[in-house]
Image (cartoon, rainbow, N blue to C red; front, side, top):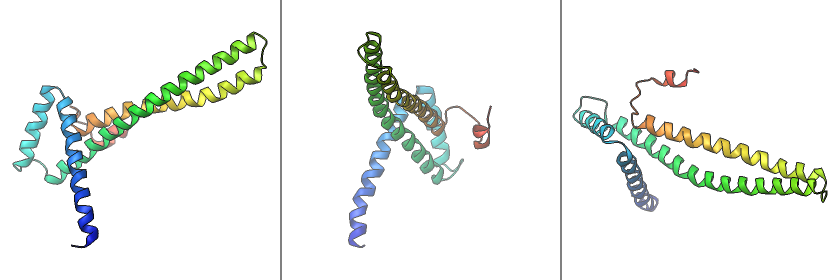
Length: 155
């Protein structure tokens, strides 16, 4: 074993352990009926009645990715909500100053030009957060029996 392999081995082990904790947290958040269904599926898989161990590994990776996306997006969304609130207040103050005759309409337009892209980014983040939730349910089984083609087909 090289020194690089010796350095990477603890990192890989730490990553696997954190991934297991994320997967366990997602499993614990499920209703008891879903937990029972997943447990039965895992038992069947390990006894050789379903797919091999690679499918379980893929399930853990998909679940971990969905959980990480959700955790990342929660912080991003709260930061964007604070930014949008501040920019709305700025736009409202610019409009109030304009109505009182203390500034030009250019200041109102400038404040709105800062507000609208921030609102758009917040909406996109909210959509991404909802998509991450769907991805998590899909990774955990979610009770859906659709193929990937059916998932991707426009409605």
